[in-house]
Length: 329
Image 1: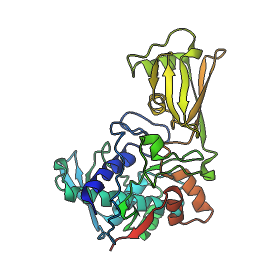
Image 2 (image 1 turned 30 degrees about the vertical axis):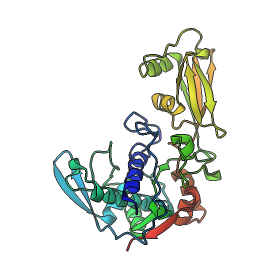
Image 3 (image 1 turned 135 degrees about the vertical axis):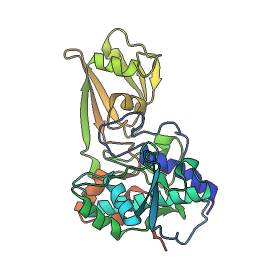
Image 4 (image 1 turned 180 degrees about the vertical axis):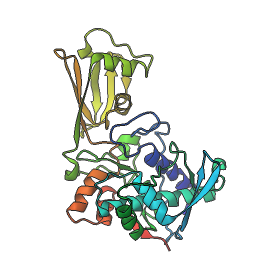
């Protein structure tokens, strides 16, 4: 395995899981669904150098940034607590298993990264309690027994593409069609392709804002934005993909921003939206499809697949193109 390429991919893994937590509408600079600072960082392939199977991780070491102590979790506990930090209460067992496989892929990647290039602030641990950098753990929930039972059944299983660990990106829902890494990141990633998902087609949201709210939310984010005159001219979608994913919005007729920037400022669930303005009610209305960055596994669609009898491996294979699930030794 090419360690340098693996590490480059793991940067993306961290972004995919930490910058896009599974929270439906709460979007901010630190907990957004969108690729932020390192937009050009994509998972690198291992140039087809395969490893038959990685050794099983039995324990996960977590540095507590508040108490300056180290917590040791069994892999079963880690998978349970990390999955609880991502899923809704109605999650079906096969979706839980799919998410657990992604979380094991994540922590395996973290272990490999730290072994090859230790992070000084982690004091020898795999991750820390800083949820701006690492996956969030939830230690208590009404569904903890259900999650634990499903997660331990797949402990040690991880996802690869051509022998390299994948970036286990996931979102709440892709709104009927997932976006490719090429659309969201601007660079091709073979296993993060656009996938039509009928299971997600009904996931839509409508949000409305007054002109005062639009003015306050946008001009405070970018000092070059000037919104004057008729509000109907303030926001124009000037570029989007065939799927409706907005790549450019022009504000005030002058300043262009990305769709995901505007979505972040307005707390829109995703960057796939249409907009209209009513002068009678002074309302900007956004019709939004999906929730999240729209890349990788859709939890909403995956749950529907589980209800129809599909297995966790079916769910993973549906949303990630050409991948394999491997068991640790």
